[in-house]
Length: 300
Image (cartoon, rainbow, N blue to C red; front, side, top):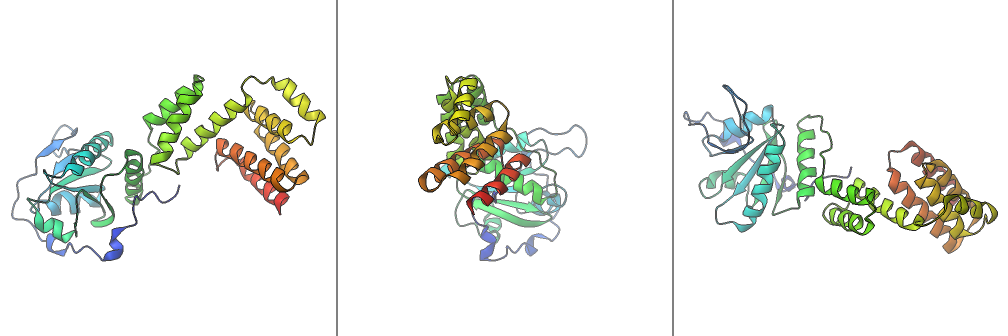
């Protein structure tokens, strides 16, 4: 996956000096939990906590030695904060303790905001192992936020499984039900927020495949391609039929062979069609890897 950070790391502008926060606080009262589930018994922890300068060392720095902490700098008057904070809180609860959201009111804790060089809010920092590791500012789409949190968890050494995206489930359901317009709209919406989402790219490519083969008789298509080996459209449709029928390797071989026999605009048309079929299978598919090498050989 490409770098999931939403913006380049702000730490290139200089290190955040947290040394003043590493002295023991004078017996602070525990910060009240704002929301989130907790474990029963002593030592229970909430997914979302309010943090002050007095509790920052314990609740953020020390906690981050074992659990990644995401620090949300916010204020009551901040309208963008009212958009981002509820999403962060919901994802923290959904995380089930894999990470903790620490909320810092910048009006009540100006020194913390100054130490973290907060110039505008909402501002969100990830703290892992007692150190800030990444940050972003402003409101961002939930899909990108999920990717950023997964990167934070990986930075904390967690083995992260890909989280289910209900929007993707809905798009896939539309595709399975044959509602290609709804599926296309749903996949495009995901890609508008997360352009590198491989699952949505594959889904959109599947929509295109389904449209191209709609109403076609597979046996007739393959028979026609067998008698018209240089008919570009006939070969492309035959490859689509093979792909849809679970014969991806045959489809790739058919089009690689066609690339070898064509030139100019025809060759480019075939190449693009083949790459579109690769997208359906995904880059980690072993047959795709072999076909890509064969394609490169045919082109060069």
